[in-house]
Image 1 (cartoon, helix red, strand yellow):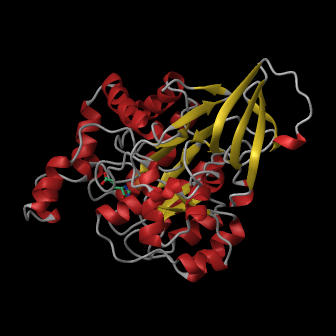
Image 2: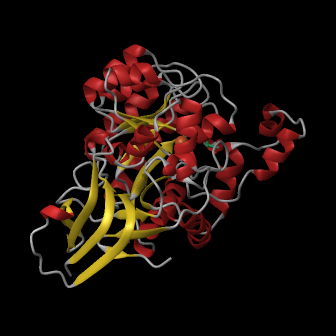
Length: 401
Ligand code: DI6
Ligand code: FE
C-alpha cells in the first residue's frame, strides 16, 4: 500500500546531521521510503492513503545498538545493599554480581526469559525504538546461550521491531571454568560459536575485554573464529582500564567498540581508519558513578562515528529509556543534541551493520520513523525521559499506542 505522510517537518539525520526538511512529505510503499522531500516538490502520487501528521517532527525510528535486555532476575537487592554500605567485594563473595544473573538466567525457562525481556523491550519501544540489539552473555554455556539468543529471535517475531542478535559468550568466566579462561575461550571457539552460528542465531560476535574479564589475546581468538564463520565483531573495550581493545577491534574491522572511557587518541585513529563506530554508554557511566570521561574531542577530531545506547543490563545500567540516554550523553559527555540523535539513528545503524537500510530518512531505506509532537528536535535530548506524544511507524505501518 502506498501512503503519503504530510504536514510534518523531518530531521532526516542523513550523514549524522539533522538535515532538516521543513514542511516535508514522505511517500512509503511496501515497507520502504519511496520518496521524501519538501511538500512543494512532491509530484502527484497515487497514494491509497494520506496521513496528516499535524506538523509533528519526524525522525528515523530510534535504534538501541547495545543491550543485554534478556536476563533472569534483577539486582535491585544488591543495589540496595551497596547503598547500605555493603561493598562490591562482599556482594561478589556472597555469589552476587554478574554470577547471580548467570544463575538466574540459567534457572529461567525460555518462556520466562521472553516474558521479562518483552516488558523491558516494550518500555524501550515507548521511546520510539524500532530497532534493537540484544546480546547473550548470561548463559555462558551452549544450551543457555542458545536459550538467550532464541529469545532475541522471538522478540523480533512477536514485537514490531527489528532485532540484531549478538553472541557475547565471552562476557564472563562461567563457574565451571574457574581458573581456566583459555579453556573456556577454546570451548567458545570450537563448540559454541560454530553451533550457534549454524543454527542462524548469531548476527555478530562480541566480547568483554577487561582485566576482570578477557585479555586482548583471548578476545583475538574469538574474533578469528567469528571471521572464519563470516560474522562481524564488536567489543566491550576500555570501560574500566586501557587495554587497547578498541585498536584490536579496529584491526578486525569491528562494527563497533563500546564504552571507551579509557581509550587513547591512538585507539581513536585506528577506529576512524577502520570505520569502527564508538558506542558510548552513559547509563553505565552514571550508574557506576564513573569519573573518567570518554575522549570526545579526540573522537570528533579523528572523525569517529559516535553512537549512544542504553547498555540495558541488571548490573551496571538498568536503563529502560533510550531518550534518557540522549540527555545523559549531552549532560555527562557534552554531546550536542544533534550528535546524540545521530547516535541513536544513523550511527547506531552503522554500529549494527544496518547503515544501508536503517538510521536515516532517505528514499530506499526502511520506513521506520517517529512523528514527535515536540517543538524542535532538541526536545528529544532535553526532557529527562517521560512519554512524549508521538506516532510510531514501522515498515510503513503506524503502530497503535
Ligand atoms: N560491561 C558492563 O557494564 C556489563 N557487562 C559488560 O560487559 C555488566 C553486566 C552485569 O554486571 O551484569
Ligand atoms: Fe554491555
